[in-house]
Image: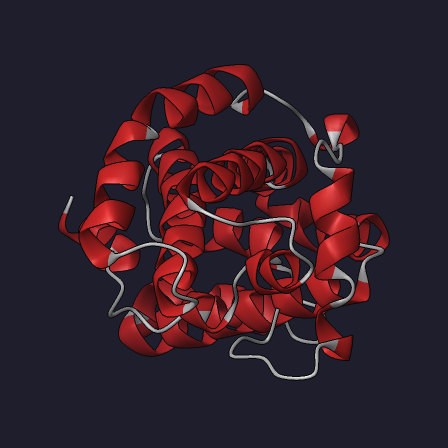
Length: 215
């Protein structure tokens, strides 16, 4: 439990807070204005994590030797160059940080992962498996972190207040449960993009005149 809490802690430096999951681009495009729109965007992001990440987490967790194959699948799946870059950046940060914090348990994984793209979802599954943690814990923390990061970005973008964002996160519990129940058993063959508009908006991030986030 202590390791789970450490990995979920915002102080664990995986780079997630440098990314808005496309919220910044959506806000500048006028697609997200006000609290209700932020909630809709967060729900979409959670469902995207469910369909687009949990199958890869499960795949690598069930078969650690599949990391190269599923890392390549993530590379092919993430055709949006901004989302692709964000996934690689966060995956590399997660593995690098975990290897420094838990060197005895992560050294072998770090050696096996040399030369890979290191996308977040397959690396997430590999790291949690290497640390001896449970698959359900890995999936739930990934979904929760997705929601938390979007809402944190909404605060820094001035879309929600701090307390309002925390209240919103608390109310998203049923959505997180629904997504986990729907997507937790999915295999890599089930990868899907349920939020195409959000994906298209995120792809415009590099063309924003000013930006706070990397994605």
